[in-house]
Image (cartoon, rainbow, N blue to C red; front, side, top):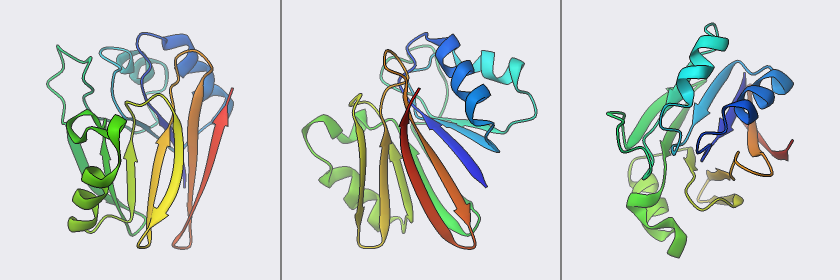
Length: 152
């Protein structure tokens, strides 16, 4: 399964559409600061499942701050990251994800790509789709997670 992970689109709908067209994912995960941008994704790609969380700039959104789900046997936690103060460090967010038994932690907010592991947990920030069009592609196959941080 191929997952496209984006964050911080801040109104850059064409950038998101371009990345989806380029990658042809099985599912899209958006980590916030999208406000109403994701409605365009739903219209243009109605057959691709989309999960989103609310970012600090999504004032009118009634979406979730944190989404926890299991996909292909892996427990995901996705959040924008602002509530965990990720711009000053990752200890709060990784402690939370560890306590929840996450295999994969996804966050945005910093506008910087990040990939690391901690205690068998994969930690990813896809960067910012605004500007240089950073994103991540996750591939889940036979219980193995591969991550590719990309720019378009």
